[in-house]
Image (cartoon, rainbow, N blue to C red; front, side, top):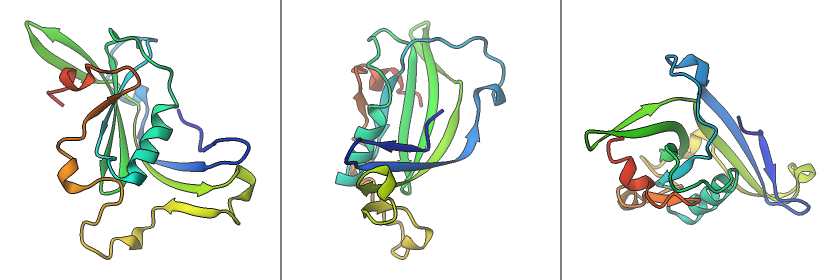
Length: 167
């Protein structure tokens, strides 16, 4: 899965992710052996400055995929929680069929400006706290009007948006 910490050495910034609601691949119905192809990435939401920063961190975790890959990783924002889903797709009689394979998880995150060993003293760029929801439905990762239009394929996935219409 993911490491708990990611740092741009030697000077940061550093991102710390906490995973919850984790379902591993073997928790899903048996679907056979998975492909070893690198997945395409589809991002939904994540269109504020902070959202673009998180999107940049996440898309650089994986190598650039080939255009013809049938695997798609979906990252989407839901009330400032990042949700991860893994799908494969195929066309059957010109109809797109998707199938979720796992893993599936939700992520909370903290970003600070500085290297790993300075977590306690470095300037915190962002941390999600439950009591931040004092303003009803205030979102920091995306703007409400951008959620329907910001599906942006990343890392070589120029056709990922068209392929996942049914999700």
